[in-house]
Length: 150
Image (cartoon, rainbow, N blue to C red; front, side, top):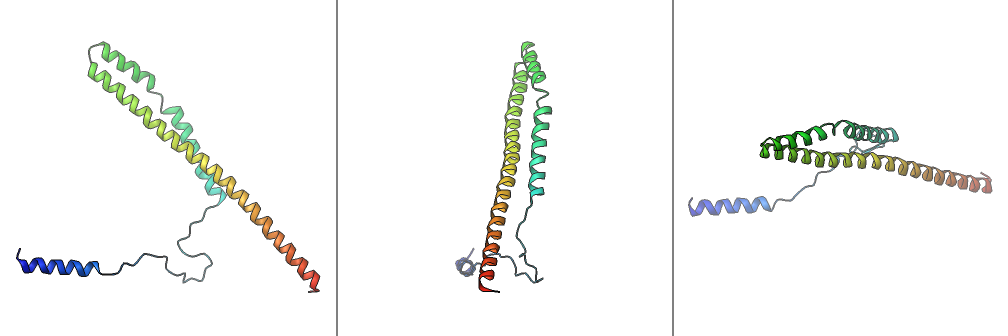
């Protein structure tokens, strides 16, 4: 590479670095709707469905995924006893790793299920609070209207 080429490449790179960055954004709502595009919404049924699926997965994994633990452990011990030490040890390691991964997955399912239950209850409490606050404001407004003769 010639010196002139190197200088030209450096110059081009410097010009590219000086360009301004533009962050992505949500485009303005052109359809006149009240909810801007890009906002996420969730309702109680969504939260309950996610929590129920996570609980079902947790329950099924706990029930069915541990069915091979005893037979794998027994097979590993039998293989070692018959002189297949490496193979028996490998089977033991696979079973141990399976149990570790299964526990991690069960914990994640339980956390999702519990979090959805908590979120559902927290939002329900927020709804009651907001509803009560708004009804108090309308009662107060009505009192002002009644007091002024309107």
